[in-house]
Image (cartoon, rainbow, N blue to C red; front, top):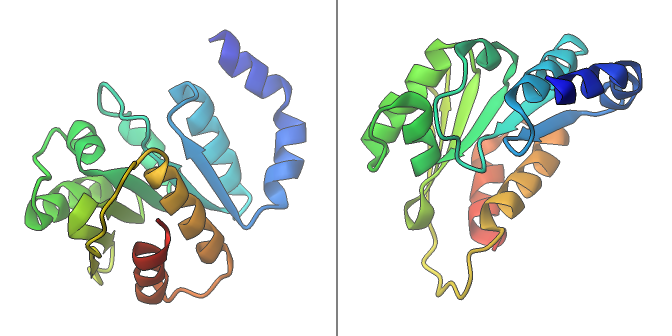
Length: 173
């Protein structure tokens, strides 16, 4: 709880900084309470929010956090932990992602490793981008790089997800 109090102490400074953003990204390296308050603040200011579910949580997140999430980014194991559903195939990942959408998130971007990535939306305009075969030497930081690049292009305001995801899938590594 002390860390949450620390965040609230700097709330006004955080508010000014967040207000100037086009996109606000949080990840699970901070306590859930801080992430939820930060997402709530960004959402209330009209800033698009992205929740990166790395590092993988050891239990599902509270359903109340999802109402402040415009795009949740997860890999298969993270999605499985969040939903308690299998997500090893594209079809299973769609079912699991729709569970998160039912909690209030607007969209789910799932990285599927070598298979590619999948964007699930409330409007059922799902986009799948097939992975490009590469000879990976080290995948350290691949997810962070992908989300950082996606957030950058998302902040540009063009909602052409297909192009952005295709570009990222082919060029982020």
